[in-house]
Image (cartoon, one colour):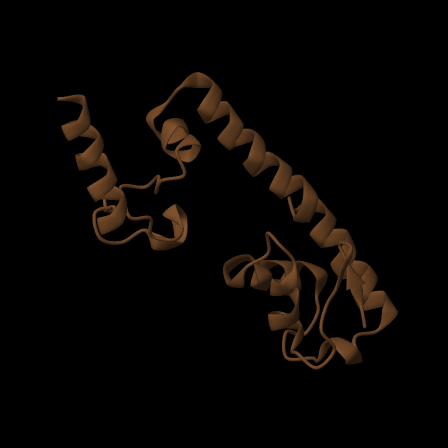
Length: 135
């Protein structure tokens, strides 16, 4: 199992697909990485020689991946929050940032539905009795 950028890439996958398991490397830039490292994209990850793995590691090190990229994204979001931008406020409030509607969707960002303002019959009856007692 080859290890590149601190990630064990899957053996059975083609190199082109296996490299996308590294955070920060996607379908768009994997072709450039493989061309630069001169590795065949159709070759399985288990069939890579140690020399090819070393070349891939050198090329991937130049890219912003894994921990550094996650840190950069987190810092960017914190900067937006600190400066008080609209996007920063949306991040703070746990709401969608890029203009999506929130009236009916956005469940993944907002979380489980919470009923607001509805009470059980018994509780509402107690409140009504308490109001009558005050009068």
